[in-house]
Image (tube, rainbow, N blue to C red; front, side, top):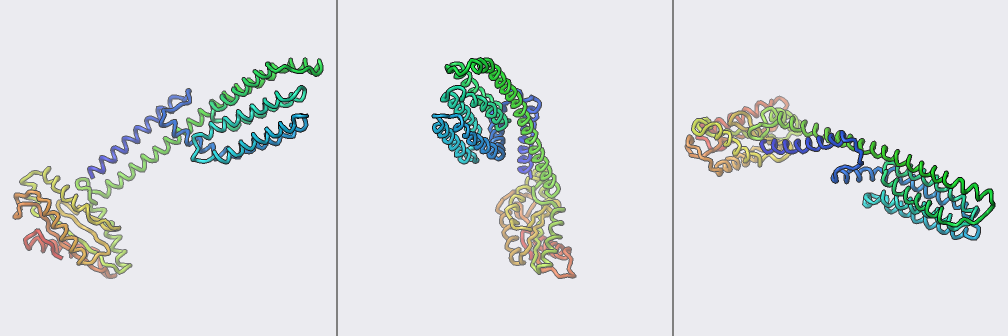
Length: 414
């Protein structure tokens, strides 16, 4: 029981430390969107697992939508139509294959990284289409960047860093090529309109990115808060389970010896008696008493007496391993062993073994004739009948114990 209590205290202390740690995180506000490394790894694993579960269909739909816009390649691609279509099909094939391959728990840590890379590749492919086409056919592809940007905000909604990296890398690439590419004159009116609309378009796209990063920050912050709250709920439930188990042990275990207490023995004895009655099985009881234990306490003191009880109980702990078997401290220096499905001969063999092992402990006992601690044992067994009472078996075992003590102690009577 002492070892069990020590283990319980260690487990409870660890739980309390974790709970306090998560509570301190909850009060921090998560403004930097970063946990300590061990918690961050667990958070990433859980959030990525949820991403795998919820986003496979969304991403597949987005890639298929990107592929469906291939009709514009033939409508506007002119001589480059086949090349544009080939690039689009190749990119879509790689993306769909990637979704099939990487969306599993073995690659869970790379899912968001590779998804972000895929988003960048799709965005850069659209910029490549713009560069390959002459005006005014390339203008339609500029508009394609807006639905691409919206899709990023939807797909990567709780990953603000992924949103920022994918959006800004393609956005800055677009600005570079938009102003470095020499536009071929088309008509003065259209050329002038494009020159006027380009900065407005870039500003609109930049505002969309800013808004997406802003919303992504708060969505990731909310996801992290939910994670911490869920962890606190789980830890509180674990603590409650631990406390309930400890309470159960305290109510059924003797605090000094760690054996079952008398109440637990009586409850188990009653249920096993009924089972034996139904099954017409034999049930055995062993009653044990430490010889001259009062003399031991008087001579060595109560602390030494408690230690003696613990050492004797440690030997008893190695018995009664089957279902329904119980070794309990019945009171003071008296113990009882319940052995369902056990014959009298089998119970007697166990009692003889117990008696021998206690002798081999060689615990000094000046107040005993043997000069060392010994035990007396009474054994009884029976197959219960309908008109029998479990007290009958208990009385028979107690009578046998009394006879063992009357015969000189340090022996078994069955």
